[in-house]
Amino acid sequence: MTEATSVEVAESVGAVFTPERARMIEPPSDAPAFGGLRPKDIAEAEEFARCLSNNLRHLRKYPSRGITNYRIYERDYPEVPLIIDLYGDAVHAVEYEREHSRTLAQHNQWLDLLRQKLCEECGVRLDDVFLKPKHRQRGLTQFEKFGDRNVTRIVQEGGLKFEVNLSDYIDTGLFLDHRLTRAMVAKHAKGKRVLNLFCYTGSFTVYAGAAGAAATTSVDLSNTYLDWCERNLRLNGLWDGPHDLVRSDVMAYLQAHSRAQSDLYDMMIVDPPTFSNSTSTDEDWQVAQRQSELFNLLAPLLSPTGVVYFSTNYRRFKLDEAHLAKLGLSAREISKQTVAPEYRNERIHRCWLLRHAAVQGQQPVIESSGQ
Image (tube, rainbow, N blue to C red; front, top):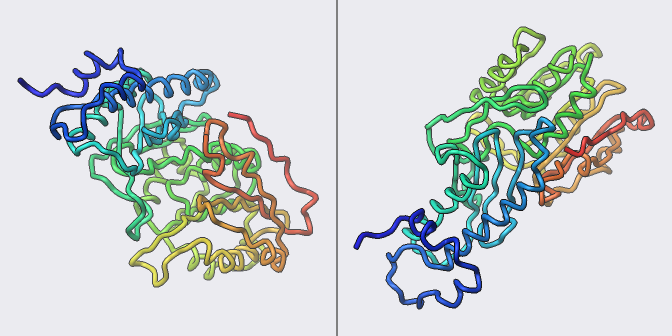
């Protein structure tokens, strides 16, 4: 007798199992290790599908509003610890580590069954479901690489185009949690000199450029990301505009920058990694430990009426507002306006608007589209 595939098992018995029935007929703990999926595993997949279906029903109006890249599942059912984002007609899913009693063979079958459920609920092809494991941060790199398949897609957001890589990294090249922040930047970028630090693939730069920024400067230490940023600018017909891409350590760039009045910036976007290291620099980057040094270098480069959008994903981060006050800067947290409403984790990032304290009363209106 041949071993049934996970899809065959799901098709033959998955529809009739409930979590209660699965508990009643679960095989003993000493059952053969290679006996296919257990009823418990199938029941978990069914419950996951129901949860996902419910989420999608609540988000059904997003596409009609022009929102085609968004989060659809965030470990809502604890037994299936996935983070899932929809990118147009493709699904990007990340599996977080969690203890379980499945064998390796059973776990792989279980993941295959989850992928099948994703196809059914999202209406996409199996080849358009990208599922990756995320291990607890043990190494020294910010972006964990899984391969070199280079499966890229062009997706749209806010009327703009962006290249995403769905196959090779946990991070696809477009941080969906900052969709509303990008819209804010676009609203206030017209005619401004914009500095995008730790620019990654340049999505903020594209938004600012498309909104009519007078000039943009994007700084990152990675040639890979700067090349990606250039491709994004080209996709939107912006490459011939006043956009400078600078390969440099951000701190070194700020230290070397002219303090002349003509070189000040009206808007800065600063979204640093929690931690990173590189053979190109002598010091590792840790946002919590180096925030004061960063703000010391930023403050003299901010024009009198300029603003800084500062954000971080570090959950334990505490902004040193006392130090900012010594630099003549005020801070207003705007996280509630920048985290998209479909995120179950409302602290996926934190974001502040910084400006010179002397013009605090002239803060721009911060609005959220609720989308």
